[in-house]
Image (cartoon, rainbow, N blue to C red; front, side):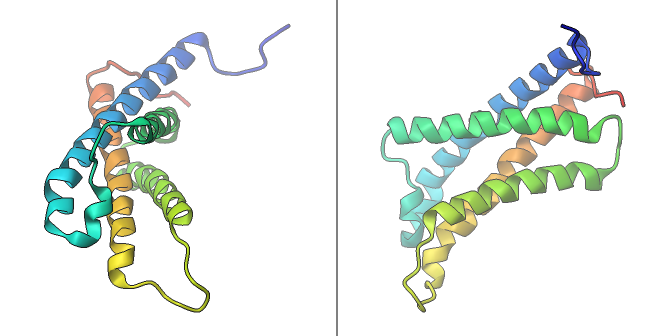
Length: 159
């Protein structure tokens, strides 16, 4: 059976490398952000106490795995999206798109309002922090990918 894809094995390997680098970047960024949340934000603001990591448990590992997989998918997509383009709006748009989708997913999963009652600002603050974290995670991955591409460790996609 003939492969109908236009992508060579070398292109697939480069995408695998980009996904792996971005995934690991997001995983490390997730750990660093969780540590920062626990030591700084949750300690100073009572409304952000839910961000504190009290123990490394299955929940934390699952959230880390989500960051890893999301970062992997971002890396593969980012490589194809930016190609050899130096357009900063294209790069930041890819980061923002992935970050906002992750942030809105967290918001959708975490919010439940009573009918007709708007939440207080302190109830929304953890979601705002989570949204910023999501964009920061993918910004880290994008910067690391740009750095790796600049060093020719990962080849950009040729259109």
